[in-house]
Image 1 (cartoon, chains in turn brown, orange):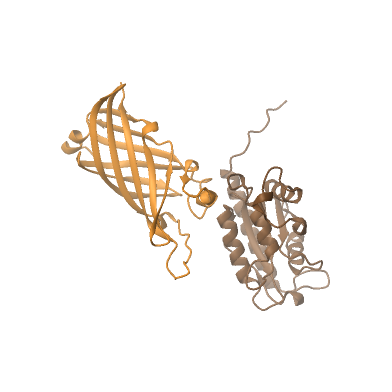
Image 2: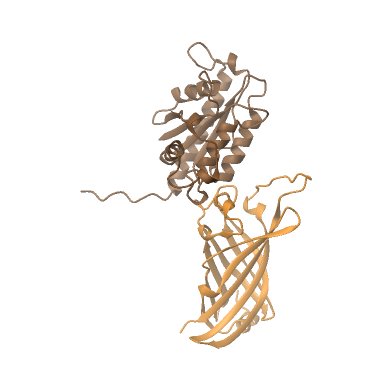
Length: 193
Length: 181
């Protein structure tokens, strides 16, 4: 099972990228979280540019989402909401509406901030946005507050409680992916040679 | 099931829907003042009138939904609304069909979005008439369902505080039938 991880901030030492790595390193057997780092290369959404072929970074994002079994987004909170770059990437991925790879895609949202509220609003709004694109969104969050003090020198969350919550969110996402396997229409397997 | 009334209201026989001349649409209040419409096509339906009374069965695929604003289609197919991947069809099967041609009452199970609930529809039956290829009969039905009873709880607050989307959804079904030879 492959999950695509996207951190919603671009900073080299992004706390959200660190949070994703923490979750990825502790993922259960058989679950691989691949962290996508192309967010900065996504151009600002412009309907005039939203034609085929799509700008290459956008095509890459759509392909990465399509090929993943699920999506795990870690978002900071800017001015009480979703960072523009992250919303912009979701907007691109949601197009064209009839073919978006986000349709039915199991997705979960976690978040880290240096403030005291742990990006709860940004997470709620990212869930809302993902749901409106057609994604199958896990109704849990992980508000990691004071994130600059939350990791040890090896990048691990020091709080057992938060680590357990991160695990719970990932388990819910994995369960949603497994459940979906029963319903998703799959191409028939090639006939044995 | 079988009553004297039902045997009279629909002429005996198996009536199969003419999908080209039938529709299954819905209306829901939008921003508290307007009506938003959509529909499903084609409609499959069968009306059987016999010794055991009258039975109406119908079915549409959720994926066939079309709405005035096509941009919201992926959201309507998503778990916030129909969850079409898990519940690809909307089905109806009557449990009671009664009344007179001018005032038909149909009760039955309407299944969608993972729930099956009892609904009551009212309408009119017209015909039979002789069509180009045999007998024709038409049935118009209206029913109102609460979308939240089917777990479609999505809502957004308007800037003035009211709800964006109504909960009551009016279903408008127009069925044209051919008598099976």
